[in-house]
Amino acid sequence: MKVNLQMKASDIRAYLAGGDRRSIGRADELVKALERQTSLLPELVEDMWNPDPVIAMRAADATEKLSRKQAHRLQRFEKEFLGLAGETQQQELRWHLAAMLARLHLSPAEQRRTAAILTQYLEDQSSIVRTFALQGLFDLAVLDSGLRPRVEELLRSAQRVGTAAMRARSRKLLARAGKDWRK
Image 1 (cartoon, rainbow, N blue to C red):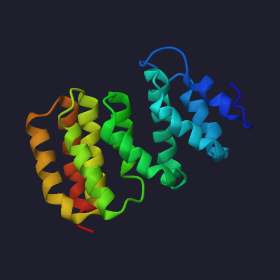
Image 2 (image 1 turned 30 degrees about the horizontal axis):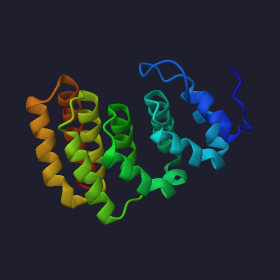
Image 3 (image 1 turned 135 degrees about the vertical axis):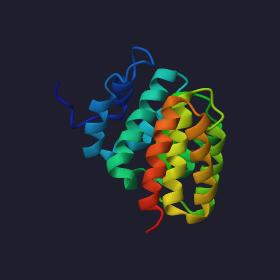
């Protein structure tokens, strides 16, 4: 399907709507369009607060995917993301925010706040949220050596008593810690 390269703000919701939370809908198409037309990022970010959980989840999915390549374009929304991360109970938003927050340039205070939020996510009912929280904490510890002892302790604990996904992620992250944390 051809991607509309000249979108309007009203087009974003059409990419995000429909179906249920088990699918990403047309979020990948939206990401491709927004990589070229970043002027519509405020509308995408705003939809992360949409009362329709499908739209909010897909907006978070698209935003997180953009952050993989273009985190600098999302930097101006860091306070909004931190606020949403602290308040949302929707698991899909939590796991996307956990993956995305450490990709932003955060002040030391924002890093501490993010670490506190992600530590709370380790108590979430969703194994995916807990697994992404571990990843986010690891990514923060790469940047902030003061977090490393606590994150290493959390990873070792998850490796022993976490879900299968948490144990596997913890093993990989602890192996990486030997390289990334000793630079």
